Picture (tube, rainbow, N blue to C red):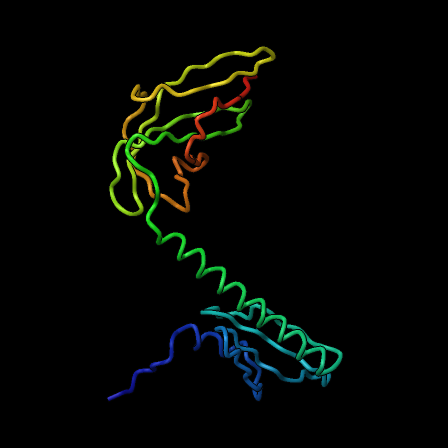
Length: 191
């Protein structure tokens, strides 16, 4: 009977980037780990790994050990900040959205002009998902190819689409993100 290796795959693959005899220095407040060693020219070196990365996130040699230690400290601090920011973003994403049926969203895109599209929330599917439909709008020209637009609530031009809400906005498609409409006419331009 053979024993299975219980070590995660990324740690197995990471081993080829760690020089023989390197000393591991772990950050107690993040998932960063630094391996310190001296190279063939007897220079102090460090390789820092974070998360599940197989390759080092940072690898360098230094003029002295004080510079190496200062660099490792900076890298550990940077990783702590990255992880803190990631947790904040994840917490925001888990919060239920504030959209309700009847809310109007606007989306602006630039492609040979500055165009506006309006959408109305027709159904709230859950904490993170809504269904919307594109609205017809009234366009008033102001001259020089500039115009203002306001939506016509309840007058739909498109089929219903279901989208996930991400931090107060909705990705309508790859190029278009909609947010709550302010209630004021939006200005755009034609070419």
